[in-house]
Length: 234
Image (cartoon, rainbow, N blue to C red):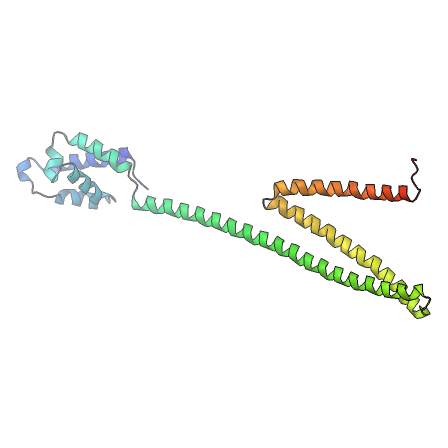
């Protein structure tokens, strides 16, 4: 953890008192930080070497400068202020790890979003293939019905063929029912896809078109009834 300003300042002040207690005059000093280094080592000061570098940056060149420089307290304050506001390597790595984790979580969220969107799209495409297949089968049923009806028109339809025609008629109704249900499912999937994956404006128009379709179908039935003379309001 990065030391705060008061901790740095207290460490430096204690160092100075220690040096003063050992050194009686500047003349007794060597031009190095041997005593300071030993002090930091014995008291397990983790940032000792960096503190010495900061002292040197501020014109302090040896143990005696720390002990006898008259302006040393201002130097200490400056070092404490600068040192405590500069992140150490551990803090930088911790911050980087947090950013890295955040980036990973965002990327993971995006990947899940894309995967889910692709699954929904594949479901829609799969349903469309089923619809196409069922329409093709329905087309074959209708063609067969048309063939039998052509025979019926000229009274060439045999009894067994009449039974087949009835079966085909039932199959046609069932086929329409299957197609209708699959179409409803497709509309549900499509509206859900628009809602979840950015088609809000399209969805609003789509829903409105479906509402209009209901009105159009009702009008067609009304017009049909009217044309057949079944209009109860006339």
